[in-house]
Amino acid sequence: MRGVSLDSTKADDIALVIEEAIVSGELAPGTVLRQEQLSEQFNVSRTPIREALRRLAALGLVSFVPNRGVRVRTISRDELHEAFLVRAELEGLATEIAAGKMTRELLAELDECERRFAEISQDLRSREPGEERRSIMGEWVRANHSFHDVIYRAADLPLVEQLAKSARRSFSGPAVWAPGDHSIDELYARNAEQHRAIKQALHAGSAAGARALAREHVLSSFNLLETILEQVGAQPRDWQRGRAARR
Amino acid sequence: MRGVSLDSTKADDIALVIEEAIVSGELAPGTVLRQEQLSEQFNVSRTPIREALRRLAALGLVSFVPNRGVRVRTISRDELHEAFLVRAELEGLATEIAAGKMTRELLAELDECERRFAEISQDLRSREPGEERRSIMGEWVRANHSFHDVIYRAADLPLVEQLAKSARRSFSGPAVWAPGDHSIDELYARNAEQHRAIKQALHAGSAAGARALAREHVLSSFNLLETILEQVGAQPRDWQRGRAARR
DNA sequence: GATCCTATTCCTGGATCCAGGAGCCGCTTC
DNA sequence: GAAGCGGCTCCTGGATCCAGGAATAGGATC
Image 1 (cartoon, chains in turn green, red, orange, blue):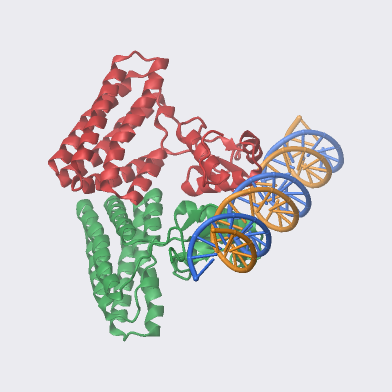
Image 2 (cartoon, rainbow over the protein chains, first blue to last red):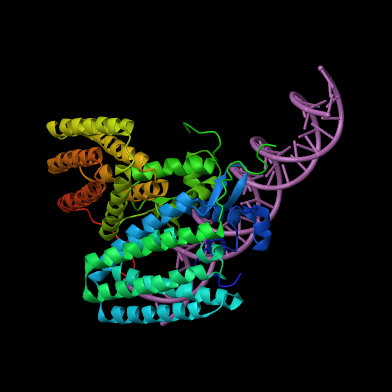
């Protein structure tokens, strides 16, 4: 395994790797995770694997059925909606608090992130759908996160940050929408505009404005996302109790 | 162990018991949890204990230091504040959503919970400080929870509910404040009033009003709590890396 | 007498082993 | 031919065993 940090257990390392795989969409929702398979994949015994899976289960990334194993959690549209509602409130809160704590350095950093994000958004929209677009999309997601991370840093609310990120995690965006779809261009444009507005509100020190903007930013992402999902025809499957149910 | 539900592993059962012990304050913050001690206490091997501890660590109830064990998480005033901020937003959200979904049955149930809560609050205030007061306080906490639970049930937002409860959990109220202290009588009175107001807003179907009331309800609890903690003189200890750090 | 080094002990993390539950397949029986 | 029953296999959950890190106490050295 690359990057095994000192002062961490194998279980923790493995949990992080699996988590990353789930969030990135590499492990599709519904995938069954076999302890033995994972243990040989990571060259460890099943013990740390089980501890890692316990952790992921507690975080809600996998669902756990006693004596029957774990599988990557599928998320229903309702749950997705809820996750966005929560994020909207928490990001609103964090941004409100941040408004009163922005230093000159943080504002500069925010400007830079905003600029970069706008640049990448523009870049993305100018490209034709295709494979190279997918790679840039990774950049886009990262830039998006950096922007919000600056705000979290300013707000200095670790718990809020952790919860919001965990809610953000519950939806592995790029893994779902088709990168070769121009209908998300609207998302790029709108998001960039919203980031700009949030940035300005923070410059102005407007706590209430920043909160409202951040909240709407998240909610509008959900609305747009929902229409995209409808077009793509994503089908959230219920899977409790498994395979060829009946017949 | 009492109440081992079928279709659950020992690790899960144990995690729940320990969680309860932590939340109720039976296990004081800072307590070191030894695997072997727990294993003989529950009459199991260390394996399920470790899995239970992993789960609690993921939930944030204990902090985990590799090779050095776990201890019950101490919470700083800042963290406590944050937890209340989060709860305020989430309860506000849930209550807003609930406002549009209240059925006749739910309203009746809410009335009953509100009535009971007011009754217990009144009962508590009329008593002199003492041991019997502590037992009633348990009733009070339960009644308080039931009231909010009705709202969560109406809102039908499991994720929000889960997160809010986890935030609520982060502070084990009755374990901290002294039951023989009349300064919290104000809390009882104010909480009862606020419950009544929230109930009325839900009857009126006022989503915005219900949200604001619920949010302020939580925030005001924190404010009052803070003054009480100051009186009691609670001292949140940092403990990272243990004891005699450099004299 | 104080400090640094070392050995011992304790405890956690990981590996391996064993028991039991769940699904499946084939056989039997009606 | 279909349904019910019993055994087989796979896989998880739990117990036990082993290795290594951390703290401590004791001794050696300055």
